[in-house]
Length: 231
Image 1 (cartoon, one colour):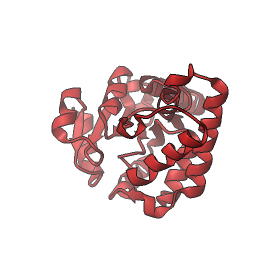
Image 2: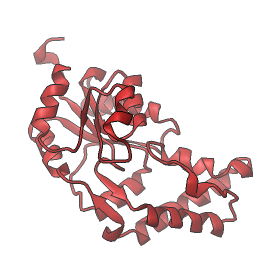
Image 3: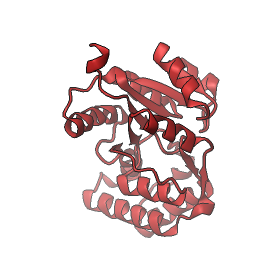
Image 4: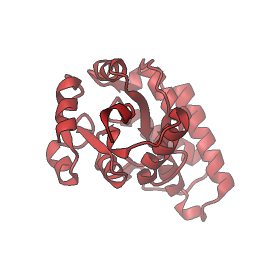
């Protein structure tokens, strides 16, 4: 593929742990309250690991003792989205540093900048709004569309193909995330991955999953993007 025929870089930002972090002291009690209100029997929620998982996967796992009742799942999802939107405020969210610098860098270079996140679309928008992240992301691959995070990059490929009317090259897609699952889904789709240690995972914990680059934050994007393209 010659340089003239290459399509723009596609940059896919994860949300939780990468652009922002929602306080566990808000999120966990909120979910517990919803489970109790709906009579959902799931006593181990507080011990559950959510990092890198899709909302679809997380919420359906709560129905383990209910033989996956579709009607109950829809009630749970609806209540979660409603209460996240209405109860979450800026005091519940940490907006990570240098995200504007990184987003602006890719926007100015003409990249096609989107989201790849386990969040439901409306939950993603609620979090971004509360964090004051107002950038108009071009598209998103969200956790509503598949329980398996490894499928989200394939959704992104289809969206780019449809939106730009091109045959997308996975090697020109970059997933920026903070968990091993972000790295795994990028590797699964033959995309590049930048792992950032602003979430729960350290450099040492992320290294075994083989991201192309590991960074401590999103500052100086021109430096780590150059390193990424030379990897």
